[in-house]
Amino acid sequence: MRGIQLPLSQTQKVRLQKTLEQLESLSSKVNSDASVIIADSIPVNHEDGVLKGHGTADLNGEVVATVCGVVERVNKLVYVRALRSRYKPEVGDIVIGRVAEVAQKRWRLDINFNQDAVLMLSSMNMPDGVQRRRTALDELNMRCIFEENDVVCAEVRGFQHDGLHLQARSRKYGKLNRGQLLTVPPYLVKRQKQHFHHLEEFGVDLILGCNGFIWVGEHIEAKDDMVEDQVSQSDPPVLLHNSASLEEQEKNYTILEIRKYICRAANAVRVLSILGFNVTLEIIKGIIDLSLSMNLDIHEMLGSEFCVLVAEKEAERRSSNKKKR
Amino acid sequence: MVGLSLGEKHFIQGGIAHDLRCDGRKRLTYRPILVETGVIPQANGSARVRMGATDVIASIKAELGKPSLLQPDKGKVSIYIDCSSTAEPAFEGRGGDELAAELSNALQDCLLGGKSGAGAGVDLSSLIVVEGKICWDLYIDGLVVSSDGNLLDALGAAIKAALCNTGIPRVQVAAGASNDEQPEVDVSDEEFLQFDTSGVPVIVTLTKIGRHYIVDATSEEESQMNSAVSISVNRQGHICGITKRGGVGLDPSIILDMISVAKHVSEQLMNKLDSEIASAEAEDES
View 1 (spheres, helix red, strand yellow):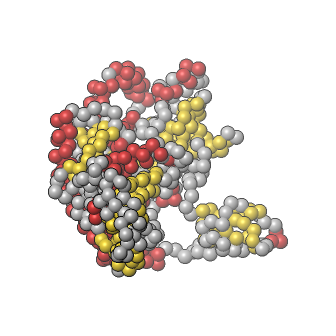
View 2 (cartoon, one colour):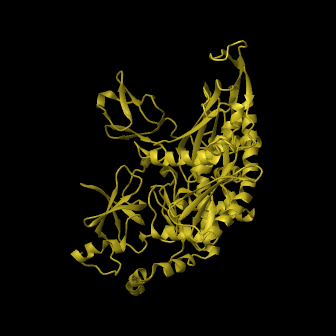
């Protein structure tokens, strides 16, 4: 069953099977001839000349697919975009990464791409908000901004000669604290107008990175530059001051109420990832409301009964959407 | 396992202090356990256990061998664990060997009882065919396919399930052989004997993070641990073995407290596991 691994009872199995069939019947068949599986031959016009790209091979004069995916054509180039693969960055994508290395004037970030992405010191706003040349002192203090293993949100700037470059030239980008990072397969996150979400009723921030990294954390007010200035000046001495007392302080930071909602939202994402459904704000909210209305314990959301229920709800939603059109 | 940022670490620690962990569990709640039995057809018994993203396989192979001179009335059981490099890049090459040896030793301590074999989960004298001459050697092999914390408990559960699944062929010993030569045997390939697995303990690992301890820690939570105590408890509620990992010391009173908690938790785990094994066996038969 599409690799869904859940301990299902017999009735749950039947229900899930039925739901998945229903979902399949709802899916659009428009591009069905563009999608190929391994060893499917791809129709090409040999007279114009063909450039074989990724995921294709030559077999007895025929172009065949070597991966499952969708055929894409750009002029003479024919390639197959694989359905399940690592993240393929596009300019303007909002991604979440983890700092792998602090190097000369740059951070290297793991963003689930074939190679590490580069965030230059010069392509991000300084904490003090002043636009100026980066000095050698700034370079020495790079670890005050991001350390190794920090979770950072940024935007894809484009490919340069030395790899994929990111930028973080706004308040909304930067380090993510107080929350949890989830990883889902990147194809489950579709590009949308909005990737930063604030669930006001829960006080939770939700960032859907296009690379399949999803951040669920406590809501942080985007502060004014001036206020931020004062805070950042007073913050570092405290950090060095006393780690034990800070720890106690930090523990009490995220209050239980908000933490419950963070966990609930995180589990909603986990359920979607188990089922292989697209991760969008609307669906996540739906799942949270469903679990709240059923009065479920948070950890029971990962149980098989709830997963089947979510699948059924999703099928219902899609079919009603279809009728509206 | 990638590192965690300071914010994430605090979030995990705070969650444990608040009794609400990252996936919504309480401190003493397990992840859903999934048991499959009979996954390896060539083995005498096998099982696969999944707890969240942790995935382990245990297989049991029985071979006829000679009992050791010191214990002529007992069979032999050995446990080997292998950490597959698919579980984690760090296990590649020789990287997993250290952890594998640690797990094998801990499982031997928890399941096989003392040097004499007394108090073992598997009754060694049931493995004897002809005293002093022939016995069954049980090779228990564990494979870590995917690792997301709590490997020891999962391996313990997998071995328990695999033992429930094991059938030892019935052996006919040719009568009339003289005392000093090796008797001839006839191994039946139709009749199998089941093990008595009621004595096999379950392992409960309590991971101490901050001032509290939790069961079934994920690898993120394990990265924050001070120390972890693994306690194996059998059906009677008796402690069969204790091992401790992690460098930070523990107050004796905390250990006593942990033992009573583990005893309580093990009852639930044992019942849960038994029902899972029973349903997996039923599925395997059908």
